[in-house]
Image 1 (cartoon, rainbow, N blue to C red):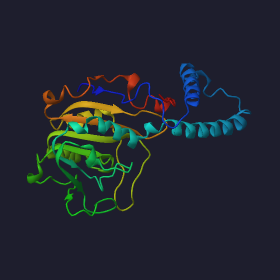
Image 2: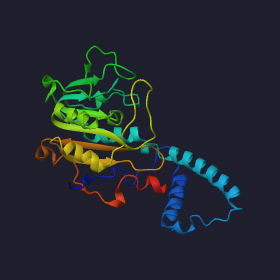
Image 3: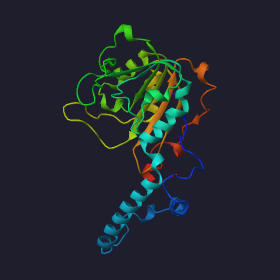
Image 4: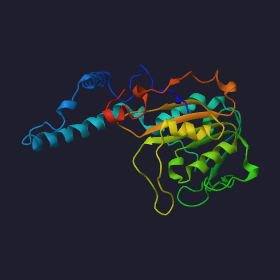
Length: 279
């Protein structure tokens, strides 16, 4: 399998909205200097008598710095970032759209995902029908279990299938992705976690998976879809998500999505998160 094409999904040159220009510049300059420093040789070399002093101070400094950086870079939040990614393309999708396992369709910014798809013909929400967040209570919602066999009448029923951060909670992920693809006549748009703390609801749903870009691309390709666009919000402050748009008709969409280079180690998700770098 070829490495998936890639986009960092970052906004170059944009000043963080909730952080003063001076503070943001100071923090950025400091981090850039740390990036260039090679501290590997110092690991395990600190004298033992210094650790009781330096350790607590370093932990406190790290805690405060992380809190300040989170305030300076709210756009790195996985939900906010993925909403911005969806807004880049949602207006392109016409016809019948479904938000699978969408609960109440909330974007967690006070809006509804239905409003993102401005050129839709119809909009449907599906839920599993039981458990926490398993139903919206709307009489028009479709009951759909992603681990069960998809009814024949549902196959190819929608032009665009949208699913946001659900697949990590489905143990039989191969069947789930197959069902998402089978629902679609054309487009599948997915948001999945790459790096996020384990989260679950006892007695309702678990938390089983984290996805690399290679795994996500392979799952979609195995079901006849071509990945048009994949991006991430790699950072050490918030959960790291992957945003992916895939289609059965790549020729139709190639002029509507930016050209992407092959994924490299330098821009892979996790590169910044594990080096505590914010860009």
